[in-house]
Amino acid sequence: MLLTRKGAATKQRIIEGAAEEIRDQGVFSLRLEDVMARTATSKSQLFHYFPGGKDELLLAVARYEAARVIDDQQPELGSLTSWDAWWQWRDKVVARYRAQGENCPLHTAVSQLGAATDAARAVARELLQRWQDQLAAGIRHMQHIGEFPAELDADREAAALLAGVQGGVMILLTTGGIEHLEAALDRGIAHLRGPRCGARAAYSRST
Amino acid sequence: MLLTRKGAATKQRIIEGAAEEIRDQGVFSLRLEDVMARTATSKSQLFHYFPGGKDELLLAVARYEAARVIDDQQPELGSLTSWDAWWQWRDKVVARYRAQGENCPLHTAVSQLGAATDAARAVARELLQRWQDQLAAGIRHMQHIGEFPAELDADREAAALLAGVQGGVMILLTTGGIEHLEAALDRGIAHLRGPRCGARAAYSRST
DNA sequence: CGGACTCTGGACTTGAGGGTCCAATCCGGG
DNA sequence: CCCGGATTGGACCCTCAAGTCCAGAGTCCG
Image (cartoon, rainbow over all chains, first blue to last red; front, side):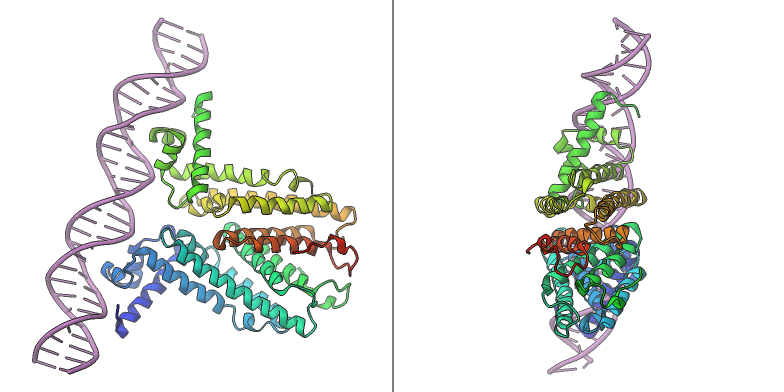
């Protein structure tokens, strides 16, 4: 399918409109009609740009949202090279999800995909991978400059921290409370400090 | 609605059959027909026992599964009174979710509920609460016998650990890998050990 | 027994919404 | 200008599954 400038713009408009719609009201009740109304497009356009129908659109939205998840954490996530950066990243994550509130567009989009499950999984997997890689890079850097214990397995630590964040977000989605996310981040980062027996207590945070 | 012994049995059969169906193929593609086929019931029975229709059935399934989640972790979760108990609990959680694999019946059931969202949220919230309470109780006991540092905030630590478990499970659902769940559990429990500077290294686990 | 329920089968209605089609229009390049 | 492909509108179809209904069978209790 060849796209003129105009066509590409329309396609993008559809993706973004669908993403908004999902953020507003969830994926489960998302109808093509809603997207059409919000983006001022007709059904033929939807199927013109997404021949695979709803699944293909959802997949495009998932990709779009996955990119946003990482972008929203920049620049902190990309350069976790000081204690300050770590705490700023922590605050940014909390703020982002607090603002987003009830709907995790990516997560719901991925769950909904029926036929296109494999492709959706791939999107989610790649997102998690990139996220974890950046955390691991940050951990390694901190080890390098002697702020984190050298004996930590950076990848495994990153995996655990990421799991905490994901779980915190999930609990936020179901209960509306942000304490779990905060606790997971604070404890996760605190754990990276390693067993220092009271030294560097200044780095700990009050709850 | 009054139920005879027979009626109650049928109702329970429907709930369990629906739960199985969901575990097999997910909630999103769940049709009442599937439940009818699996449980050898007719549509009139479904609506007889669940006048609220699909939503009410889903809610019943969610309750049923929520109870299972806790039960499957017993007796360990209920008496986290020694290091051994903690590690056995850890192994049980990993084993349970490894076996369950791709579908988290509760989580998907909760997400699907449209109209009955509030009720569904309440079920999930209560499950998380009970889970966290038992973890916190375990932490307090370990503090009492001097195995965990007294200065830890038991509730907050339990929240962080629970978030890690939830996130690990979620990542398992989307990537199929169990490493994140293991990492979150191992590091979460290790964190509870507190900063001991090399002492009690025997309690640490190889990865 | 026998009456009044609960329980069950299965045909029927309904509506929503995804997907198809074709004709009209726009637009860039030659 | 003019052609061909890109773009658009909107009517149409069609499947699928939730929910309704009623008649008949079972079951409990006096």
